Image (cartoon, rainbow, N blue to C red; front, side):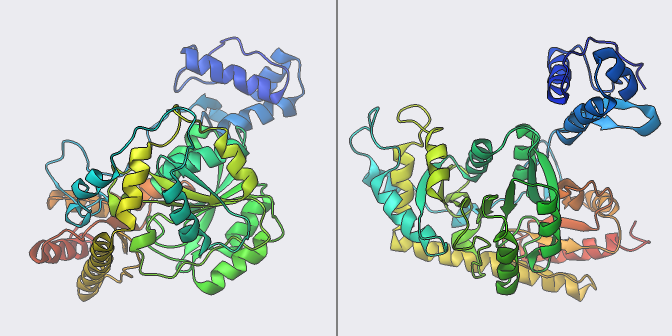
Length: 442
């Protein structure tokens, strides 16, 4: 362990002291592993109450910048990168953890592109394409109870969530996130300096007790995946959604963000936790799962006040979403042939996942196929150990540890993407997973 560093920490309030330490880290005067002064010493150095120093360290801990080690002291954290979706680079193993859609089921853009090219869009013109806005208003409005609805277009769902949180929160504000949690949500909250409050997910979605506890902890925003939750694949039941709406009815100004990332491909009904009287909300739907990850566009249906704040971060010609991309999206989602392809894609993902879950059950591994591109496989052994055995058998899978928000170090789950496996490969992977969970296989 490194010796305590005596870089000059400034400030009189908790926020000023925390900002000073952040600046020292950014300049390289404090490095990962360096130990900060004990609370009592820092309070004496700055001439402040001990509780002020404690609060400063707590802010930094919530932001992931420091780690409290008890008698070992408070140290600057090693900032490891959050895992990302997609293929693992430079791997010779068969990657079954990508989270990718099937490229054969992504619409061909060439025909639609020829129809949407036209006159150029100039500075000062409307940010949102008129036809896309009208279509999105109908699509989103069908699933939202509040009567007042504004539509905003962003560069994908991650961009939408980041902008929504930024317009409503300040650094160290608390955000309720599902656990296990979608990787991009973890990344967004960490980069924004917000404090993540985990809400457990069970087989009916976000739990009522977990939401109660998060609201009691003072969260100012809630991010929920109503269906095809990533990584678990669970969807909210009608009763669970109603129970969550009842809880949120007592907190109408908490920002509720629903990320319906699987939207057009989902096999489950949409049940919203946004009640008719809720004042701050957003339903976000991106097109990346069904039109392709490179189609970085999402539409958000929000309350008018939130829309006004989002509009301040979008301006014609500088931070708008390409009108060519907007026109292309509208052309595709209104094309009957594309609609037929998406229906086949929805059936393909559901059928292939269900077939693989049945393969696992035949080997004694219980698995609910859920909804979405992936399977969440419960194991009778720590996922890390099973993953290591699968690597020896030629497979690369994701462990549940990567999606843990609450520091779980021994997840008993794998998240795997199997819809593109040939039957023979699927048979082999199912057998290998079952074997890897046994003491003999480990």
